[in-house]
Image 1 (cartoon, rainbow, N blue to C red):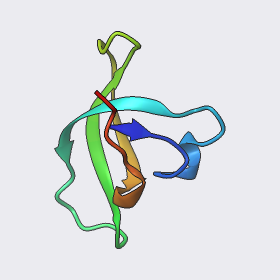
Image 2 (cartoon, rainbow, N blue to C red):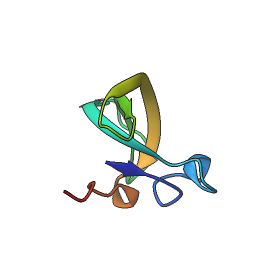
Image 3 (cartoon, one colour):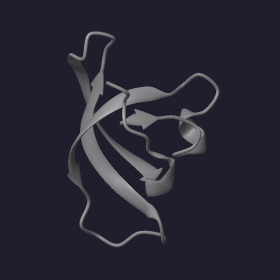
Length: 65
């Protein structure tokens, strides 16, 4: 997934990342938001860091193939 300012302000202004989702939090949060766990990917698609991030579902985008 592409995570940028559309998903959360914390990823705006050039702080976006490509993220491989491995799980979605089960606990309820604000409407349209979720905690997701996964890996930050480098340019080659390799996992470089595991993170848990809080994002809006509607702001997430698939990486073009």
